[in-house]
Amino acid sequence: MTHQSTPTDTDRPLKPALLRGWRRVCPNCGSGPLFKGYLSVRDTCPVCAQELYHQRADDGPAYVTILVCGHLLGPLMLIAFEVFRPDPIVLSLVFILLFVALALFLLPRIKGALVALQWAKRMHGFGKDRVVTPAQ
Image (cartoon, rainbow, N blue to C red):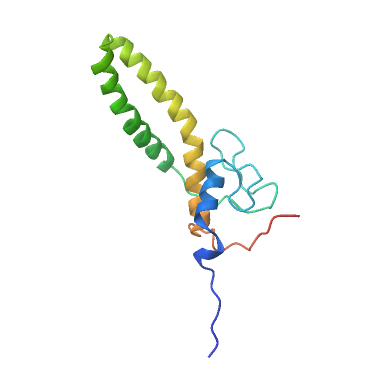
């Protein structure tokens, strides 16, 4: 009886893929840009030709970004109010600006990590494509 080799998670290590996604580069080769704009994922990597159109990030990165920003800035807002007692309008304006800046910073990175997670776990058609190796 012969044993057929099937692709496993060891073929695509999760941690390097997530770090590459966080850096907004291709999860396969680590050098091609993942996005063609602020949040638009490329159909294929220009360096290694890895197909990226399989990704289904949709609203997930936005929800995670809001969750992270809220959990980071919520306690800071309470501490700032208790320690400094600023005018509520000033406190609101400062933390709205902080929230927007942090969300704009985190959103493409979280989306890149989510696309990389899907690639590493062979989700949504990423496992069906051919094995692509980076060009030397």
